[in-house]
Image (cartoon, rainbow, N blue to C red; front, side):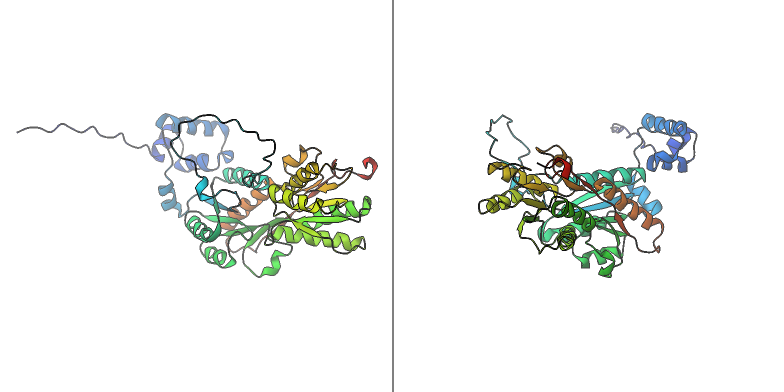
Length: 377
């Protein structure tokens, strides 16, 4: 009778017990090293990691979830303002090549990255790592947004959501299963009557101080506001600060053009405005809009701050390195991401603790685009 050749057996997958045995520690210590390394002494941490590398051990997410009924993952949901359409996806197989393009007049297109969200994401990643969690980022758009968020909610232990990214009804549905933290939700999130934790910045006070400098210290009376999206709670709060500063100076409401927090749209809106008249100051809802305003003012042959003052809001690096540097309200974007993750983790540890409504401080940075009085041109 013919004998069948013996199949080679696959090597046994190393387990956490193997790592613990090789390192001479408990499995709980191995778990702490892999989840919260800063909480373990350096010598112990190095011994465990040496064992992990020697054995080729990879933690099993499924096993960890079964053991602790946790995934070890926190979700972060952003609005899908990336400017990409379905047809923009590149082919997976190309022949390469090089194109030479005259890019001098292209300007900032709809795909211009939102540097505010980049900084929030960076802070969230750092805090998640420090707390021993992975971070899952979702950016749904249009009708698919609620589907994406609902799917992500089933894969994570808690969810941080930028305000108005998804409907309140869906957030309430998700919050029955996992903690939900809402970022940047308007001037008075406590008045909404929801049960979510809220983390934001003092938009109104920052804008009030900034516009107070423009109309008070500099004595400007001709101001136009470059507004954000109509459904943005951040912009709504900043407009409250704008109105308060105007009232402080005894001025009526000012005209607006809409930049939607995007450089390209703000540039178009300000270009249309400048074709009709030139205001003394353009107060912009965010730094991306202020960068677009600079583009439009430069294209019109005008100077900043000589002809027009320009201000922004957020404090992204692009505003600091623009020509001229932009006066802005710097908010702690990375700290906002860190605070959101911290709120999720704290809620996991204390599900019945009082609801959190946190407000982080901001800072007005006077630069060349709208300088202090003693350096005014």
